[in-house]
Length: 256
Ligand SMILES: [Zn+2]
Image 1 (cartoon, rainbow, N blue to C red):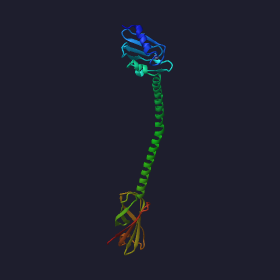
Image 2 (image 1 turned 90 degrees about the vertical axis):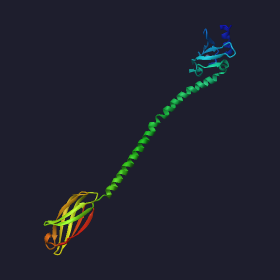
Image 3 (image 1 turned 90 degrees about the horizontal axis):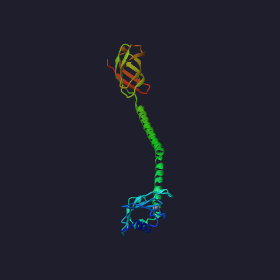
Image 4 (image 1 turned 180 degrees about the horizontal axis):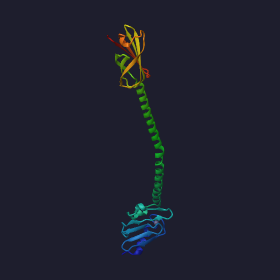
């Protein structure tokens, strides 16, 4: 049968140089049942299968670092079984190219991460904050304009719905039917009767919106010096004003 010497000779005949590192420093051989050949230079190790037949194969069982290139060569072939002609056709340059490609991929990926991660918080966050602040300003301004317009449209509105003649003056029943409080309200009456004219005056510091009050307006003058109850009044004109600029007049016809 075959001997160890024939096995070694066949290895050197098929592979004068290491399939991976192309070194011609030779091989170390080991194994009893299985045959192994290991490159002295790059430490790549193959299991030799059907070694003396036409379809001899080799399984790469170990790879090591290329001491010069500082790269692991052939690790993508680790554990693979190929015919000897496959291993013979491997070119040094192809192996190098793959390793260079793998080496450069990793730093590229790192650079991409370093470039893409920081800009996200530094560029986009201020933009988002500025947009949010602008939106907030627009909303606040809009609310302010809305309320100032609503407030400017609000005003007091008076309704004098009854007057009564009293000894000391005239009772005026007044209501603020507007949507804003009235301040500095003055109630003046002008009374005309058969026997002469008279006038009464009253004040209210505030008449709130929807508030109804009874005000006793007191006599201020009488052209004939009559008391109001004896005036035989047939017409009372009530004029109401306030500091909000509202002035309204109400006329009551009084029948004897
Ligand atoms: Zn080698």
